[in-house]
Amino acid sequence: MKKIFLILFFFTLSCGYTPINQSSNNNYSITNFELNGENQINKIIKKNFDRYSSDNNKENQFQIILSSQLLKQTNSKSETGKNSTLSLKISVNAEIFKAEKNIKKLNFEEVINYNSLDNKFELKQYENILIKDLTKKILERIHFILSTN
Image 1: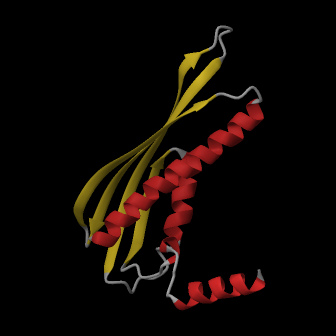
Image 2 (image 1 turned 45 degrees about the vertical axis):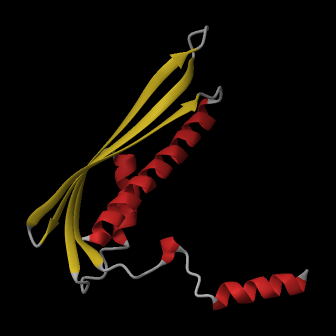
């Protein structure tokens, strides 16, 4: 068993494998960003953008203005009147500037439907996890657009 693990470990290190999310060959930095809207989403975005704002020596430098919204809806109710299925919708409107010129206006939306839980604390924790995941999907799309410009 140890030999198999050792061989697998050796091939993983020697083949040049690097996780996609951890590759550091980004050719851009974010010099300034402004956040408006939903505070919970903005905290996640700010934490992510702080990693890209430290290096001002990159060839592409962007300024970004983001406006975020969070919408929770009840899709259906049970016979007793309790919420049975809910949906979360996160919308982010982005304006991307390069050298003080507006180069793109983009709208991103992510929606997820989920079943309600009887325990309200667990439901709130589950919603927080969903909000983080949906926001990270939107951030991946924003970073992809920035890296291709």
